[in-house]
Image (tube, rainbow, N blue to C red; front, side, top):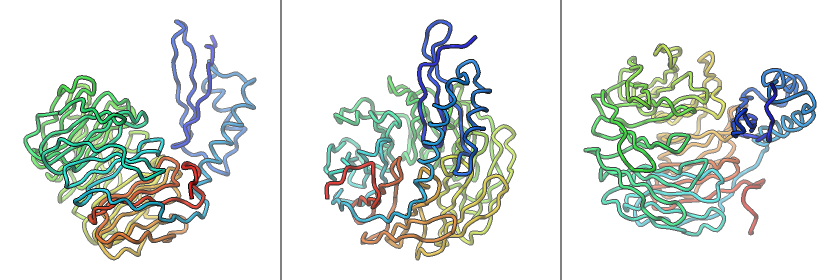
Length: 431
């Protein structure tokens, strides 16, 4: 029987359509149709037919023209990533009195946060460069931070003082101080549902906490070295941790049970993350390799080689078809996830590359380096499009907003810079 469809919602990155409907009890339900392969060459009529066939209980042929319109809009959004827009320095913020550690946008991109050795986290308005809040209370370096995107009403900060704090992102009110780690917290994350916080620390453990109550749900115990990276999968039922003990572990979030131990690296892990669909984990290591693992079997499916020095960071594009690696050898490599082939080598930095991020469309990459620059790259063809210069010391962190038309860079020089695309649509033009 057909259930009444309430509305279509578009998810731009990665591309998909969310169907809101009323079930038999009259309760609101949602079904997501992932369209990860959508591109200019997609036959939208055929895709629309396929969607109608797959969710025939929700959509009938009468909705096809509306569906085709939505698919075209999604494709248009993906293609915007190919516009040859250069970025210009929009604002330079004297952000902190000591070096910055990290920066992150909320989903809307109208606010971002910076952490610093000065023990604070600051909340900024992107459009004006105005400081909105200073979150004070940590007794040591604020090393890692995050918004609970897509909601953006909470911020978490992880510190060398061994605690994580949960804040109201609008008022600055401190909700909870999460105590339990016995050493510095160096990585953290909200689950996608914003109900659980994960923290990883130099005490060899990761811990899961309840967002509402601030109570510890469980400790993920098993690593014999520092836990320096962690990532939830999209559904939030699994988490992967990467450690200095040369291994990554995949855990069941509900039970805290270790499901897989990924043990083929020969040195410390620098980064561990899930792809969008959650069937693969990528791990980068000081051993100069990056590995892709099958989540269900724990088997290594590809070993990505080519760097001749430590790999410091890795990042998937939004759909999970590409993986980029950043190395101390000053280069970035981009790999096809399905066959493990290197599709681009990005050469130009003159120092360690410590952070990377794809734009939402997956057509551009930004990288932060000890050479004091952030670079903007295209993948096809492999080329440096722009060098964002001006910082007077190494850049520790860089981030794209959700639309991919604003970049923030956070540096050891105590400043943060906002770079805006000439085609920027997400921020009103005040110049």
